[in-house]
Image (cartoon, rainbow, N blue to C red; front, side, top):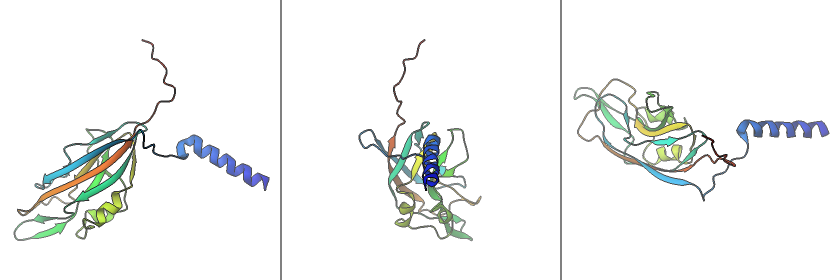
Length: 177
């Protein structure tokens, strides 16, 4: 019995020292913000929000609320058109980075399909998601084909409320010049 306790204790200490220890958000030091994605969908390229959220090393962001008035749009032309999704929250490693990584994959598998989650289902997959920096967070509509958006009703209004806990420096030392 003693050996089992010792190995459990070692496992806990090891995981804590590797950074997998208990984490909690402190409401007294959280920064709150809002990211908007109000666009007219056009062209065939991915469309990103004008603003982004910059997370530095050790910063933690949680998505508090996500709302949108649509999750699908029409692609193609007058002879061959179809509905498809593509709206989600993504991260990039830098402003120059062109690779968009979804914040989680729970709702993504349907997000870009012809049967995307509706305006009530999509927020469920995003709200409560944590993102750990360093990352740049944006809302984007990713187009999975080279087909263009089609039609006259391609406006989208979407927004996300979030909270950030910035990494705290413990006992900061003065820097000598």
